[in-house]
Amino acid sequence: MSDFSNKTIVITGAAGGIGDATARYLHARGANLLLTDVGTEGLEKIAAQLGERVAIQAVDVSSEADNEAMIARAEELFGHVHGIFLNAGIEGHVGPFETQTNEHWDKVFSVNVNGVRFGLKAAIPALRRAGGGSVVITASVAGVRGTNGLSPYVTSKHAIMGLMRCAAIEFSPEGIRVNCVNPGPVDNRMMRSIEDQANPGHGDEVKAGFINRLPLGRYVTNEEVASVAALLLSEESSGVTGSHYMVDSGFTAT
Image (cartoon, rainbow, N blue to C red; front, side):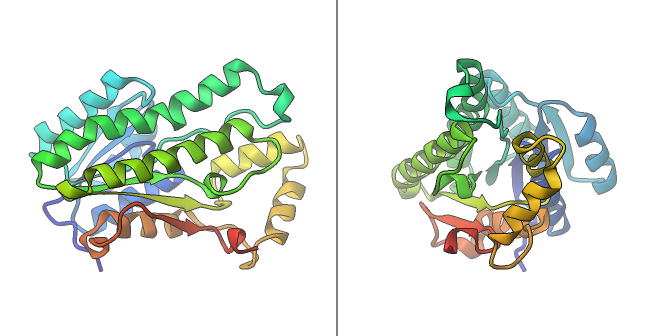
């Protein structure tokens, strides 16, 4: 079992299903946590339940200044930052390519690509000051394959896979590792949104269609993604960088 005692981890998108589950997993193993999301309402509940060693902050990941303030606060509170889980992301509009407007594309890229870029840029100096550390980015099965109706989302996830590989090469000599965790269909809010947008009023049918394509015959859970993210944040994966780990119920095996 990974030990995160005296380690500080920053999590973006911490109020969502995967972020929440990862926060609970890491806290149970001793981590200090700075939990961030675009608002604090969901974070307050998590922090109250976890108790000590947890701080929260409202962060718009599409803002470079917010990302810098996030890292500065983590160092101020806990001394060092040893890892960051760049987990914040949005699914955007679901629909054919020709219905995707500039606004749709810009909104997804501002969060899914610039949010990761700004978070990485802010975190690297702090990880350097800590003597090294780990960056984990939430990508997706959409980072390795295409799908109908999600062109901005799929393109954004391909982009951060490329960024991950470049950053892993560049920062490895300083002991800073960069990897992606790639969830498949996860039983959480984002998939409900995708299902409902794909066929309004018939989301259950869309879900059944997805499940029929999964070798394990079910969606994965937030906790299953969290455990892999935590592994990549831990010293138990000290030889791993520039890689992506699928947590997808076998979706990409087909």
